[in-house]
Length: 52
Image (cartoon, rainbow, N blue to C red; front, side):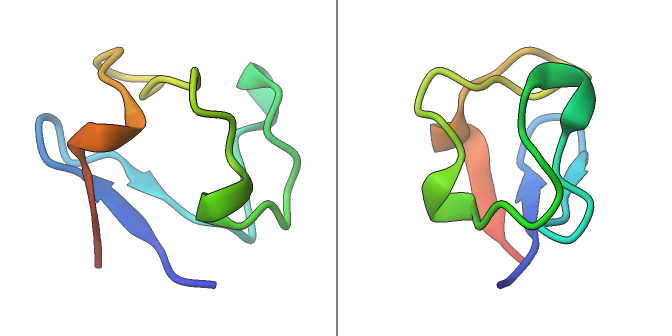
C-alpha cells in the first residue's frame, strides 16, 4: 500500500494511518478510500492526489 500526496497542499495520505477523523480507518488502501473523500487540509478530491 503506497502513500499518496495532495498536489495542492502536500498532505500525505498514508494507508497505515488512514484518516480516522474523516471516516477512513487505518489500513485502508487508497483504492478503498471513498470517492467522495476530500483532503482534510484543503478539501480537494481524490483526483488531486498523486502516488509518492
